[in-house]
Image (cartoon, rainbow, N blue to C red; front, side, top):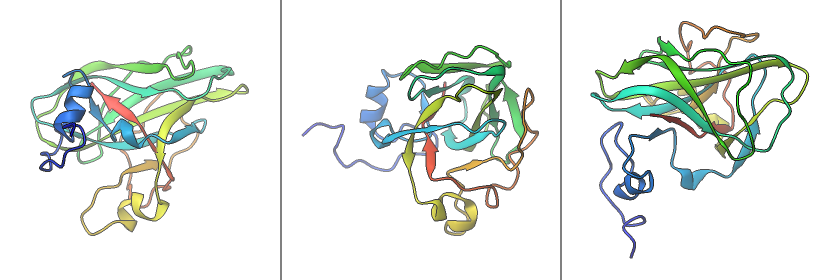
Length: 200
């Protein structure tokens, strides 16, 4: 039997989910919002709304980029703003990438945003990654995702003490600047599409 599918002990927060996952990532320091095995389709971004996903990060890791895998091809509109942001375990903004008007979002391509400053993780735990697009006209990009039950993704619908898996930020009309906090994710808009976001 391949060790990719063998039952293994649960990993510590922030570590690869299994040894197989680590090998599949080429031994790179990729920390994912979910395993790639769970990707079951794609969903379109909402203009001016930051989409958030939980990612476990270990102490000692330094975050420099945030990535997602694009879905179907798109034609960007005008006045495009696109960026990614990293939030700490308390939901406070750690860093944002520069805003780009020409993000690459070709079908099934890797779209990567570089944080304005590298972020050293000092405490292992659940962090949040946000990606935002805003534009006028055209078609917004799609991201690869896994469909989940909306009633269990937010903190309000999970067991006591569990973190929200993903959410749409409550603030709309975002353009160039990431919100200072994630807001209260237990009351943020729950969404059935859990994004595949990667921190490296």
